[in-house]
Amino acid sequence: MPKKVFLELDAEKQKRITDAAIKEFATYGYENSSTNRIVKECGISKGSLFKYFDNKEELYFYLIDTVSVQMSFDTAADIKKLPKDLFERVLAYSVAEISWYVENPIKGKFLIGIAAENGSEIGKKIMERYGEKSRDIYEQLLKDVDMSGLHSTRKEITNILRWVLTGFNSSFLESIAGSEAGIEKLKQDYIKQLKQHLKVLKSGL
Image 1 (cartoon, rainbow, N blue to C red):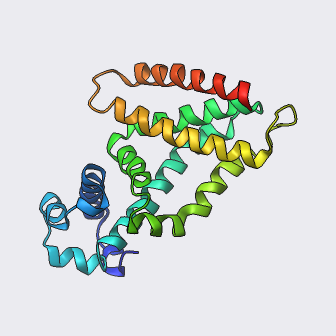
Image 2 (image 1 turned 90 degrees about the horizontal axis):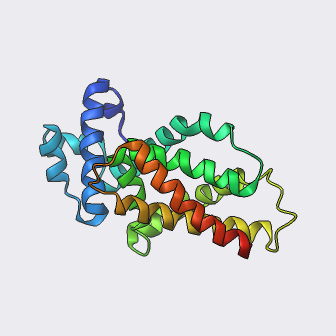
Image 3 (image 1 turned 45 degrees about the horizontal axis):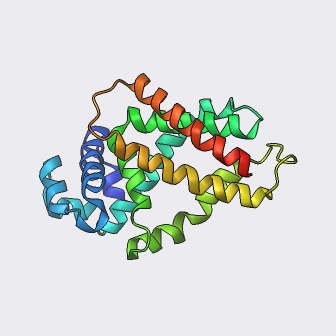
């Protein structure tokens, strides 16, 4: 977590530091990111950065918390309107989530990159810290959905959907990196591809 001195900075300077760090981690991942590039980008000394955070790891986890909260806040209104049907709900939730990623490409890339840390030392710490929270999101999403007509258990369905959506979203965002298509076109492409995946899942579940 940040030290008190960071929280006492004016909002513009905090944003400059966090934006530079998010961009760095999104571009290079955790292991290959450089605090030297971060301080150069935001125009502070390296000594100042470590007055604000104990180390790179603390900075990284602070960014995960900050960006995750922002995404949750920005998409909350859409998620409250989700339909009761399982597959309609999954589609609506996924569109709200991917829309945020497309509209916030650097932050979206940062969040997706977190999943790529799986298996590394930092990946293990991420799972220890956020694993239960990730499971809770999908369990809450599907809590009041009727699954009585499906062959699999609620737990199996929740795990399968979490796995499919995480992988699909990651692949989709990688495929549109650098795309010059407008946001609405990207959304339509996403919806079309996700519907195809859900159609296959529906017949199996």
